[in-house]
Amino acid sequence: MSDLAQNGEFWIEIDGESVRAAAGTPLGQLLERRGGLSMPCGGMGRCGKCRVLLSGQASPPEEAELRLLSEEERKKGVRLACRVRLEGPCRVRLLREEAPEILLETGREPAGNRIFPPLFKKLGAAVDIGTTTLAASLYDESGRIAQAGLANPQASFGADVISRIEKSLSGEGQALAASVVQGIECLLEELADRAGRRAAAIDAVVITGNTAMLYLLTRRNPQALSRAPFAADWLAGEWMEAKDLGFASLNAKVYLPPCISAFVGADITTALLATDMGRDDRVRMLADIGTNGEVVLQKGGRLLCCSTAAGPAFEGAGLSMGMQGRPGAISHVEWNGSDFAVQVIGNVPASGICGSGVIDAVNALRESGQMDETGYLEEGEAYLTDRVKLTQEDIRKVQLAKSAVCAGMKAMLDWSDTKTEELSELLVAGGFGSSVNLENAAAIGLILPLAPSSIRVCGNAALTGAAMLLTGEKGTGEACRLVQKAETVNLAANPVFQEAYIEGMYF
Image (cartoon, rainbow, N blue to C red; front, side, top):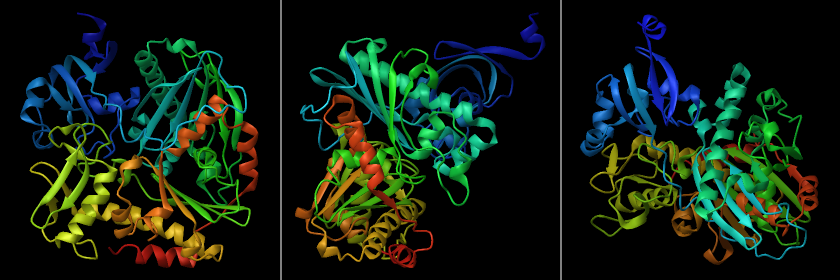
């Protein structure tokens, strides 16, 4: 008998890699330690996002798997990792989500008007580390040649920034960094494969993200971000070597754009670059609707910034059947007077709902009378198709998210003594891309009620701005000047924000 067997252990294969395990080991726990598995519900068997393909000796399917997995999936050997206990040798393959389609829409691509030399020589990449998702684009001298996206692997450590900071402070900082580095490497490999290139040829990468994401990427102690006065002791804006960040297969220089403050990160800096904020005297507002909802108001030569904890409801995460914008996601919903009419990405059977669909669905529920102004669902849940539904808990999460974002907008107007009608333009950025119905967004109270002609959707502006730095359309000096110009407004004790937040809970 081998030493392994004597110790009650055995080998399992995960995506071709041999890993030692013991009988009774929870598969989800093992994969979480390894990195690359997303469990937004914390391994409670509620979200169904930790699907794996498994063959070998393991515990039988639990009730959660029978409920969340189709019969066809179960026949193929699909399991929920969080509900599986290993009983002997087996083979596991992670079922990675398809690259999101809507997430990557940028609204404006770098126009090729190079003012500065590109940061890369042969091949370069721009990466946006979102709290919920990763998005990346690959460029050569001709322009963009590939794009891809996936769920942020750090989600297995917690769905929000605060929980990940706590994990880092409790000794898991190295694992957090390794997981996101692995995710970015997977993305860059995929980009190179799509373009028929070698990832090893990438010689420069611009990585943007909120302040906490860049702290965790660089293995910095985030304690300064976790307690008052919440003053970051590092704001990026520097070059690093990929190997120093832990990239195993990337021999490139990496530029991390400067952050504005602890709560307003480099992703807003690059979004400001992409939208030409700070370059004229108009009264304009940028709202980046993501897990951390940031708002920037441009007025009188100033850039006033704030951050609100919106949550990932509009990024296809955190909802019972939420998903990113990929085939199978409901992207639009209408109430036709007797039933819901839905549009599904890829014209395939609906399997979930993405951000733009959530906005439409909530408004359709309101119009149909199935949901009242407080968000109460008469039946406790509402089916949009025979398979896809929104629950009461989903509606509550949408309420929290949309209320936080719009309250942030109203608080910024009050702070600067600006009336809504003074805004010449509202720029809406976020993971739901350019397909969002602005009238519905305003109807449910997500954005300010402006004329559609005054609102422009600019998709993933953070990624666009990172790409502009990479290609030379924008310079690192301009990024630094924007940061120096920006002022962060603390909403914690702002009475207007508190009042607007409570009012915003209504539909």
